[in-house]
Image 1 (cartoon, helix red, strand yellow):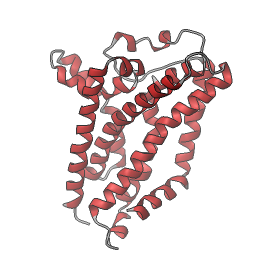
Image 2 (spheres, rainbow, N blue to C red):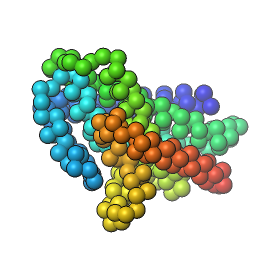
Image 3 (cartoon, rainbow, N blue to C red):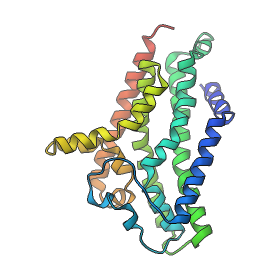
Length: 259
């Protein structure tokens, strides 16, 4: 498993698409903080989510820059999609995984090693966004008030919740990849899925459990994560159950596939 994970990282760091996506990510954060702009993608149910720019209509600092950029986490998911293709999709769609399986690696170990590599890179990406946002904001506006250990703890907690909700969406795409052997379809699912629960909630407003699958709105609202423990825990548990169920389903699907 360790050798498979090492091979995943080797291929990732030697892929131009990965470095291009990282440069675009840095450029986007730099431009957004320099222009003090905040944007959103998708459908939002909460009134507070509809006027993202107004929420940060104040003198920006390093701290404010982090809060502003992480409120756009649903947009940053798009910068993470190359990781899905490079780590999960490449070997599978090219069928090069057969070479690994023929040397005695079990299908379960192969899949879990790829998934762990992918999850670790997504985790790094989330906190990489925090770090780049803070350093860029500090460069332009200084650190600002409120930067203390409590703020760091809030960022760590918020970042972990965002990581879990992102992984719930990405795990759905992993399942689609193994089900259809299509990178294109898995990316379409990653882009489209966040809209589905929101639209269904609008159509069926009395179906409260649908809100638990609204991962997009949670990951893009750090203040909500900090101040609404009950709702945040409900969505987080739903995300973890989604991950567990789909990991099991993907493993089962892979085991019964013909090489």
